[in-house]
Length: 91
Image 1 (tube, rainbow, N blue to C red):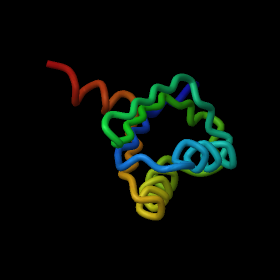
Image 2: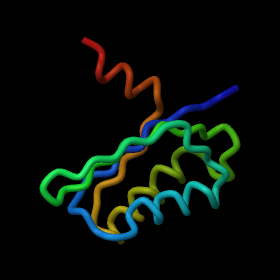
Image 3: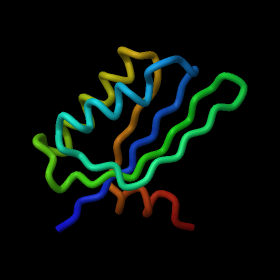
C-alpha cells in the first residue's frame, strides 16, 4: 500500500538545497512522485509529493531528519502525511 507524504521547504535561496533534500530521500528509498519549486525575490519555496512505502526509516525518523537537515542548510523543511495535509487544507 502506497504511503504518501508532503514535503515543504521554505527559506532563503542558496546552491544545493534540492540536491541535499533529494540525496536524503534517495538514501532512504523514498520516491519523489511530484515536485514544484519557485524562487521569489531570493526566497526558495519547494513542495514535493513523495512515496514513503519503501522507506528504510519510519515516518517519524524521516520527519526529524528532514527537520535537522533544514536546520543545517538554513531552511525550514516539513514532512506531513498526505491525509493530514489534506485535512488541514480542507474548508
